[in-house]
Length: 318
Image: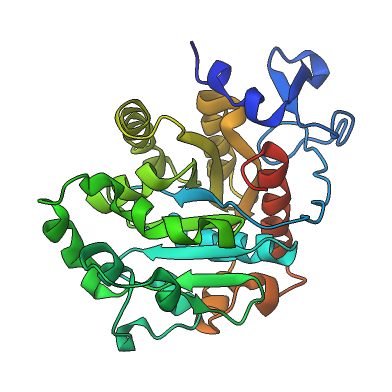
C-alpha cells in the first residue's frame, strides 16, 4: 500500500475527484469544500479548498492531544505550536500547550519566565505529589494556557530510564486535565529520545513541521518509522494528522520543488496550508506574543488561522 493510499479519509470523510488539466493524481476535497477552489492551484500543487469557519462548541473536552514532532531542529515546531494554538484559541477552543523541550523556547515565546519557576513539567514527570493544575500558566491570549519547561527537563530522560511504564508518564501527567481543554499540543524536542516517545505515546495525532529544504526531508522517513513502531507497540490510536511545509519561499524554485517532492511522497497527508518564511516570527517571539496578536493582519497570521480551520476540517481538532 502506498503512502497516499494510507491517507486518512476515514478521519475526514473526504471524497476524491480527478485533478484538473487531465492530471492522473486524485485530489481529496474535505466535506463541504468539494467545489471550493475550483481551478485555483495552491502552493502544494493541488486545488486549494476553502475551509469553513469552525462552529462554536457546545461544551469543552475531552481534549485531543497533538504532538508537534520532528527530530530535526529549526523546522518551526515551536513557532507552529504557539501560533496554531493561538489560532485555535481564537475560534473558541480551549488549548493547553506543553513545553517538552529543555530549551524552553515555547515558554519564553509566551512570556513565561520558566527559569524562575520552582515547578515545571520536569517535576510533574519525576516527582509525585504535584497537581498539574498548579503548574499550568495562563497566557495573555484568552483560552491559551501553557505547562512550562526549563533546562531541568534535560535530566528527565536519565531519571526516567528505570521507571515502570516510563513511556506513559506524560500521559499520566495530562490525564487529570483532559476534560478541561479541547486541544493539548506538545512541543517536542529535536530528538527521538524518551521524552519524544512519551509525547507520541500520550498523543492522538502527530503534526510534522517540515522546512522547505532538501536536507530537512532526510529524517522524515526515520520519524515515520518511529511513529509506526509506537503505533504498533505502545499507542494504537496514534495517527499522522499532517505534514506542514514551513519556511516556504514562493520566490525560489527550491521551495517549490521540496513541496512538490513531499506531496509526491506523502500525498494527502500534506496540509494544503504552507507557512512562509518571514521576519515577523522572530519579532513576535521577542514580543512574547503569537503572531495572531502581534501582527494580526499579516499574511502569516492568516496562514495559521487557515491551518487551524484545516486541522478542524480534517478532524484533527474539535
